[in-house]
Length: 416
Image 1: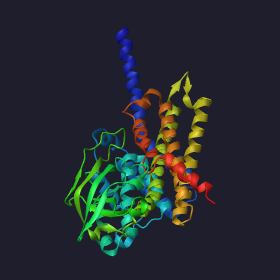
Image 2: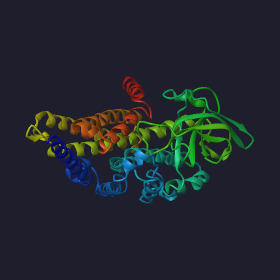
Image 3: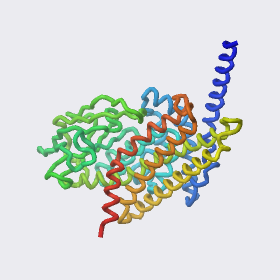
Image 4: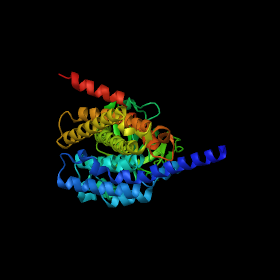
């Protein structure tokens, strides 16, 4: 009798899992129909671009994200397919192979892609930040040499600011660049570099002058330049679909023509890049949280306890209401910051910091609450909630920790 009971219980559990898993693939498709907030205030063209990104994310990212995460696969073929749709040079001038979107439209794209695979989308945003930096601060020769290949993702790009002893205090970086003839000789180490060891070009901030931010310059360093090597692929909690490694510079020879901007411009270039990067990473958190919310919303309608669906309980209803408020307020603050960047508003850095802090904090909370609503099933790797949770946690740390965002915001609030 016990064997029969156990057999029936196992069969019922397996059936429930299959039902949940079969529905997960449908959750993504139903997102735009069930969430009209995503389209609020958008033009017809932006809605079309949003739909294109959602379709690509649903077909080419979401079904494979679990495998990429489990096996630490950097999905190069998919990335190049994304580049064919213009997602490799979102903010780059079309004359150099880019798509030429404004910040608002670009972040609409990233939100949809992040719903499919947050980790991979985060790398796409970093790659796009590098492409924007070359397009904005590069000379004609540099643009001609790099941008088309970067926009096509024939060349992958990485941003290199952080060092083992210079994280939040980025202006204290120690990597040095010494001019010798027609080359700079770079020595130092960069830490936690997304794409490290795989990317083809690295935008490296190095000290060419005095201590502090005014002594920093920016260089475009190719992976085959003499003197550049890479550390091991770091073993991480999340972001497993992109490699993360140290970039080690040991008398690395960089031609003078690969300096981006003038000597001393590097910190300004890095910080301007981070304004957009903070927007993008906040948007990645929003996309992940929206996906988790969609799955939790549908799950509580079908999961029954005490003879009724979980969605009938007021506690569940109030939790979903709070999650929906977090999503929509995150979307609004991110889009407002994007408009500030597009308009070059004087307070755009503060607004980007506000958006990054709010969206990454709320995004993590929504993912965590979604896991809680799934109960034990949310903790299983068979279901994607735990992967989104792992991937978004680092967003509260990178592109400037959320504590640094508070410093920037408070300076803006207290300024005369």
